[in-house]
Length: 518
Image 1 (spheres, helix red, strand yellow):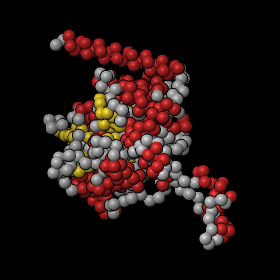
Image 2: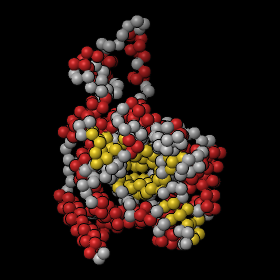
Image 3: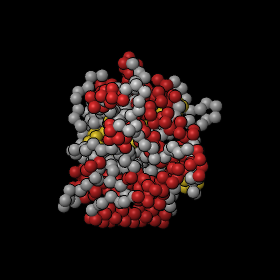
């Protein structure tokens, strides 16, 4: 497919920082060019022939006005190849995103990879209290851990479901935590137009120009992406109403939808891997078309989340070879249409932060990096198929990400690094331990783990004989004790407090009116 060059979307200057992993090596590509073309053509045929359901009147009207075909009774739309190609060519290849701390601005796309933590889990766990429903206090602790974890470039984003907060205004409390407890660029939830509008408004208050009204601040966001949110596709081939509302709201304000089908192969797609990729590609392209019809040039991220369904047990395994292949193939399809790509990271079905959790997580996380995934979500803390956000697993995953940064840290190859004079000076049979060359470099020469035990057995035993999970338990507590809240303008805090209080009062009042009318 021929693509015209596109300008980065966003009006900020990203500054490189440790949370951005830049991969200059060629990515892992399981598909050859002919396979990429065949999958893309198949997706276009799905959209033109089978179509896709959109359960929202406004979305269907927008598609119809853009040139798509619509059947209102079936709530289905069809998109011809020319329309798809025209619309997706408007989306930017890279996105310049603004954080509360300008030093943590991001460029999403290209060779850059950024990591975000777990999201949406109803339960939390730690070695002290076990598995339990999450609370607002747990959410705050996770936000603090994100803030002090250098390798996580993305902030919070409805990390867990705090069940002590009513669902109707839970998004207000979680967004407030995301904004105030860390100064990194946040994710958000966009489950419905009202939720997305509240979050856009709160982010506008954070980034409001001096003296601007709320409306003026919201209008200013159209050219400044400050938040991204996952838009889930109800596979196969269906967008539900709340997700479409959220997508439209984000696109209207120039914010970043991450359009992500969740496909269990064999249940929500045909059982072959190429068919699952073709279906995912079609579903994502439909969302991109809608976003561009709403706001031409709107930044958008191509999301992928495919895993096989275990046909013997009905379970959903993670970190499988099939998921690895589809993850990397999805990255190729995103690059084919010139868009940043999102996948998930440290996934596991294990109920404990154990060896199974480690090998499944690494088998998903490292391929995501090798495929040059631009946004890796669920990269820290995911446990038990995503039902649990684990504090110990969070720290173990951070260790994995830190090791990946070390692997891809490109050493400079020059005369000094090659050290031929040192090799000659020491000669055969000698050692380099006491050389000036070694003494000047040894402190920072190698990766140093903060979790692994390197002690002799007797020392390890005498210090408590802790396993990796127990050491991780200590580590997250140490991290929390070292947390210092990032500075924030008091006027911004007051504006957020006022807006949050006003909206909670409105929501509770509306709920009371509904109950009294029954």
